[in-house]
Length: 411
Image (cartoon, rainbow, N blue to C red; front, side, top):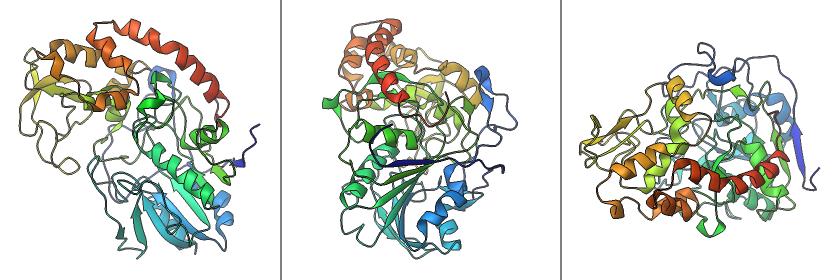
């Protein structure tokens, strides 16, 4: 095993975890109990997330001053983790929040100010914007930090970047870090170009593919074990999920951010998020963000939508302009089948080929999202999707070997 201080706690629980979140709540299309599992993956009827396994971590918090990095997904049986901890008389002193804020309703990339939670009276410190890493003062009255965020398994989704900064801060300030693990809704899919280190940013901090097939707890192990971060003495504990493996079909009960409203969007997200680095709209400002794409100049398409100002997308790209394009999937099962267990480039290539001004198609953000300089060049040169995918394979194979060392759950 690895030399770092790591404990994975796995005590089997018989109870079934079902979430009935209070707020914010988003409606998901279908649920694990009522929907057939596509492509052979089994429905998750009894997955018990780390946060629900209170008997495994509450004893670790006794007589400790505790901070949490949480948002609206950090819930157990309808209660947010901070409320649960306070009910159990835990000395909770600080709430940290990621991108989109503690309640998960801020626009993507929007500044989230520090605040006070009206229900608990606790300070809420944003770890997005200029203050991505907790400083010594913010951790001075803390003994233990708990990380409990539902991720979606894509490199450019910033919750794992927040986790990385938190790990470094806890190591530097000699604070214990407890990760309450949650499933990866994309399962064991590993695909896409591996990030080149010269393209590091908050939407991609490590040399991993766009889809990396790991839970937050597994990812944290890898960061330390591969010495990708400066945290050699981090006191890390991972409270694992029960009744879960990487083949489990797990459908999120609460939307992880305002524009991932349902499982259809989550399944499509790794493929269509690349449109954020182009002039194309992917539906922010509509009821189907990340389920469609379009632009006023894509006139060869019959389908259309018009972005407007809505909660979670107050000033969306191409606001109030009629965009022509494609609706990729209106429901979760269709989206799942369309992705074919991989990152799809065909929609990006199709839009590029249909767009009249090729020089204006990509913007500077595309390279950060792709993590590599070559993908844009390959599309411009007219390379086929098959050839582009083949160019990823050597680095993907290396990553898969690295990844395998840190898995906590069966493939």
